[in-house]
Image (cartoon, rainbow, N blue to C red; front, side, top):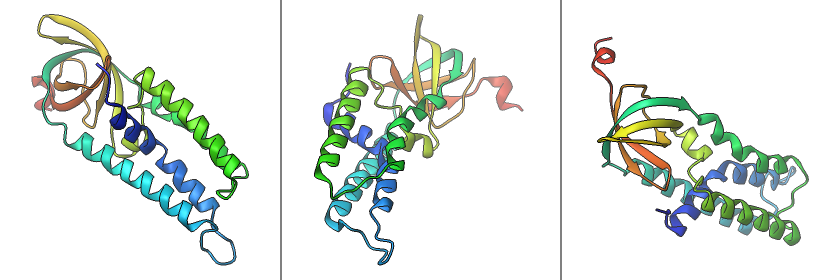
Length: 187
């Protein structure tokens, strides 16, 4: 199972929305406090905002899922910070008016997208982390079958909890509901 290309692209682009904001700030003229390249700024801002809204809306609209019991869980939310490497370029001289620099950025981000799409890691996304989603490496039981995968969840859960999950890609799942084990509900 592979995520649709356009959906994956929107999720990937949304992951760089904070970088887009940084680059837009770098385009501000210090004297006029207006953008040096307003058309490019508008296009970049619209693209990032649209993709972030699509991603968050899609995440909030996933409602169904199969019931599983969590047998092992480890928090992998720190992996959502793998996006930080491209953010390093925001500290270098960056000019939205330099078409060669924009083409290089496009090539670099295209390569990152292809890698994240092929490895199905497109959901490792800082916008989702900012919205409160965590990434968890889990071993769980679906019916009689033991499985392992990465679970993206806004709710906290632990060993023994039952979760409703929706498969997003080969080893990536989205938690739609958490039912804590009895002993936790009484606390």
